[in-house]
Structures are given as C-alpha cells and as structure tokens.
Length: 365
Image 1 (tube, rainbow, N blue to C red):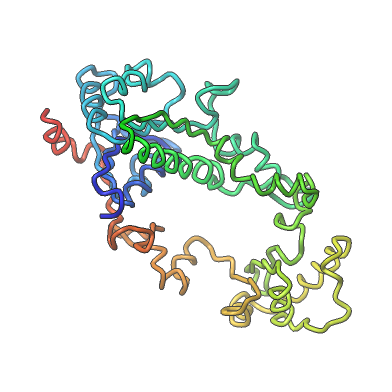
Image 2 (cartoon, rainbow, N blue to C red):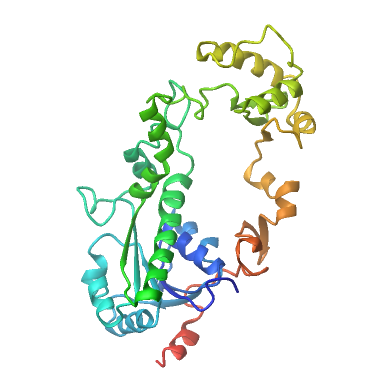
C-alpha cells in the first residue's frame, strides 16, 4: 500500500498539523496508530479532532495518559514504532515519562517528531497560539492582502499545514532514512514559525535584490500587479489571473479583446498599474465567469475560475486526475496514486478506540 508499507507510526491525537502529518504518512502506506483520549473531544474544535478526515487510514486505541497501565501500553507501542508524533506543549511528554530521553533510551532508532507552533525553545515556547499568530510572527501574514487593507489570513493552510504538518512529515522521513542506515534516531522539532519562515525564502531573496517592497499589495505576486490578481465577473463570480510572462500576457490580452490596443497602459511601469487594473476590471465585468472560462480554458493566458470548495470537487480537470475521492460517503482531497501510492489507499476514519483489542493483541497485552 505505498512506499511506506511496513513503517510503524504512533501518533498522539491532536488538532491540525500533527494529524495532517500522520494522514500523509498513512496515505503513503504507513501503519499509523492514533492514541485517542478516552474522553470524546467536544466544543467548537470538536470537528477538527478525532472525527476529522485528517485521521483517515489510521487505527485508533483509546488510552488514559494518567493511568500507569495505559502509559505502559504507550511505551509498548513506541518500542516497536519507527516514528512517534506528538503535539503537546513543551515539557508535557517529559512529565508523563514519555519524553525523547525516556523512549529513545530503550529504542535508539526511534524518530521522535514534535509538532508545536512556537517550537521547543524560545520566549514564546510555553504560551498558547494558533496559526494566525504563528504566521503573523514570521511576516507572512503581514505580506498577505491588498494594499491599505487588513492582512488577510489564508485560512490556516499556510502555517498549520504548509509550515507545520508538511515540514514535520519531511523531517520525520529524513530522520527515518538516517535511522535505517545508522540505527540512530533523532528528535524532529517541527515548529510552525520555523516552517512558515522557510516558505517565505523566495520573497526574502526578492527583498534583498530590491525587486520587492516591504509593503503588502504593491508587488508582483501580492495583487499589486494587475496581471496577477482576481477580477469580478458580470455574475458576481471571480476569475484568477496570473499572466506574468510576456507570452502569457499576450494571450490574456487576446482573450480580453485588447490585443493591439495602443491605449492600454504600459504594464512594465508600476505607476500605470492602477490604470491598467481599471481596464481589466471593466473588461472582466462584461461577461459571466462561465463565459470567460469558455474563452480562456485551454489557453496559455493563465486564467482560471475561482471555484468554491464544493465547486472544485466537480471541476473537469480535478475529476480526471482524481484530485478528490469519496470515502465512506465523504468527498475529500487525496494524495493521488501517481504520488507513489496504491489506488484506493485512502482509508476510513476510525472511531476513537475502534482498534483497541486488535492493537493490544499485537502488543501481547
């Protein structure tokens, strides 16, 4: 069931980036055992916890981490695991006797993955936080949004999942390769602030080169340029335009019926960008999104319809590539088979504690 078949992962149930990392590993074929709390998570964030599609393809055992007998079960699971994933605040696992020093003493090849927002060290390490604060600290939030408007958080995709879960998965797999070749595991301290900052590397390079200004909404890729922006159509729906290169810009003008228009402002002069944006705004407002998509689909104009989340599941291109799958009646995005997994590898979401007896039997308990 994929390249990670035979890899054993123990994941402590949590929210967002940690479970997302475990989901990626499960999608790639790893046997992921999720340790749920015996009590069911409720409240506002309940839908992000143990009932989330982020837990697909995993097995679940429900334990009480205040019960010494259940702590022994955790140690038994860790003793046979290749990777352990936890997302508690710094010091919690150590107080439970489940810290890296405790578990790696008997299992030196263990990869111990830690997912936090601020990291294991630093002035904010022991404080609470969420994606919006983490990306704020890195400058990524301050750079997102239109000029003279409030910064616009890109859901919690940039921090939690891009800077957090994906980097934890990358670090865990890199450490696993090393452990398999040397017999030595390591601690992977994956902090969302660290990963999100790395995602801004190219922008920092552009700042250093003097081709980016430290003010949002005034640059090439942040809606500052009129040929890299979103436009409203006649029906109130939107189109995304990303015609950066000259040949793609020419295709955009051709589709808009503006090719050869000598009155069109010069796109190479940022001082004329606002006037050019007004021309584009007027042009796109003359037809519906569907009508414009008939014009631009299949061209090199770099124009795409802005679908809603549900509309995206019905898109023709997404459907042909299998970007979305249905599991247990739930439509969801999935790592596609061409990404080194077997067709149908995406599994069901387990109920908390669903595999207790099965896992205890495997442990000989």
